[in-house]
Amino acid sequence: MDAETSGAHPARADLRLPKVLAALADPARLSAVRTLGRLGESPCTELLHAANLDIGRSTFSHHQKVLREAGILHVEIRGAQRVLTLRRTDLDACFPGLLDSVLTTADRYVA
Amino acid sequence: MDAETSGAHPARADLRLPKVLAALADPARLSAVRTLGRLGESPCTELLHAANLDIGRSTFSHHQKVLREAGILHVEIRGAQRVLTLRRTDLDACFPGLLDSVLTTADRYVA
DNA sequence: ATCGACTGTCGACGGCGATCGAACAGTACG
DNA sequence: CGTACTGTTCGATCGCCGTCGACAGTCGAT
Image (cartoon, rainbow over all chains, first blue to last red):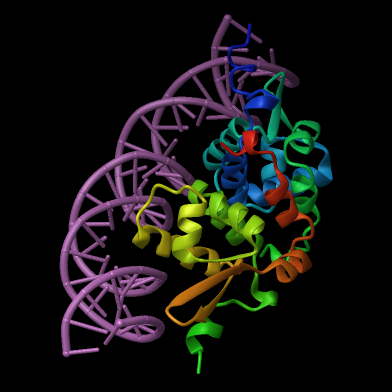
């Protein structure tokens, strides 16, 4: 079926810390992840606006891909939209405390 | 005195999450930080060997600078050597749980 | 069924960063 | 002083990453 949906999402055992950190290191992606942490789930464009990102949809599409391939995001196709969610359980299993830390860090240390 | 030693080390209030994550995202730097977490403190060359990094001294010097400017390392000059330590208290204050997470993540998720 | 509005993807380009080797500077020890 | 060691700086190379404009599915309305 979806060599698309499954191949693009790395298995839990394939997650790697450097890749996760690199994905989170970009300000736009970090903002998106933190916003998604508050929203729970969101389609791409909606998240793009909710995170106040001043970038085009094409750029955001690229970021979404990077986050997905790092194992941070799960993408579910609903009609014409792709609904994004955080892979909380997988991330917590591999990197205990990391996601919580990234999500709860005060805004003044993120700017 | 040390406009060198103090200016190069950002104040706690100036630490920024994206910069810290970017510094930790590089495999060589990540390995160095994790090794330093076990050693407590170490001079550059000693850490370079302890971390099994297959890179030259000049490259490591660059990484050390990146980690220092991100606020992750503290550098103390002792004679001819520079002794490196993690800025644990500052990092814990700004990004609770982050350093612990990075240091305690299982090796198999770091490779 | 087709038009239009919306969704997200793809190819290309530009710039940053990791790396190296060589030259340099500071320190310790004879 | 001269040798050995520690780490930095510089210039160059090269691959990767963020960005954009043009393109392609999908849905609702007419």
